[in-house]
Length: 188
Image (cartoon, rainbow, N blue to C red; front, side, top):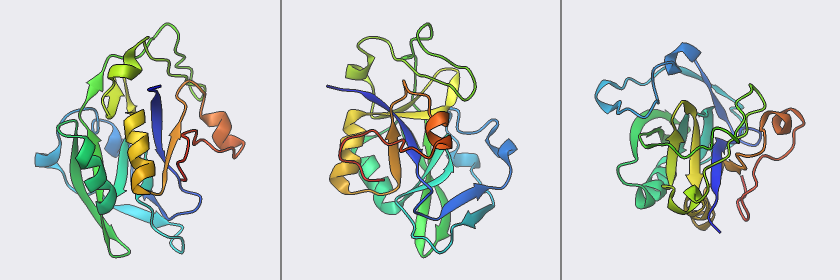
C-alpha cells in the first residue's frame, strides 16, 4: 500500500555538516529553481572520524547526497528536483537536492503544526498519486517522499537516509534517542 514518508539524513553513525548561518535558508529551498544563482555556502564538518554516508545531514529542507545517491534519485525523478553542486568531502563530490515539486496534499484539518509536535496527515488518496519527492505548500522546510522512493533507497543500498512516519511527531523520538526510521528494510 503506498504511503508518504518524511525524509531525514541520520548523523549518529556518519560525519555530518553544520550550516554556517541559518539565515542562509530563509529564502532558499522553497520549490524555486536556484541553479543560476547558486553559490556553495561555507560549512563545518562534524564527526570527522566517521564515514561519509550517501545522505549527509545538513538541513532537512535541503538534503545533501553523494554522487551515487544523486544518480539513483535521478533515475526515478525528472523535473521535480535540481542537483546543486556542493563541497567535496573525503574525496567524494556531494550534491544538494533542491526540491522543486510543491504539492497541496496535506489535510490541514487533521494535521498538527504545533512546534516540536508537528504531525503531517495527507488527504485521502494522495499517497497513491504522490510524486517520488516533494514538499507541501506552507511547509517548505520538510521533504516528503513516496514508497517508491523508499524502495529505491533499499534496492540501491543507500546509507544515511531515514524515512519517518509524518503522522508521528519527530521531536519526541529524537529527544528520547528512539529510531525515527520506519521504512521496512531501510538501514540508515
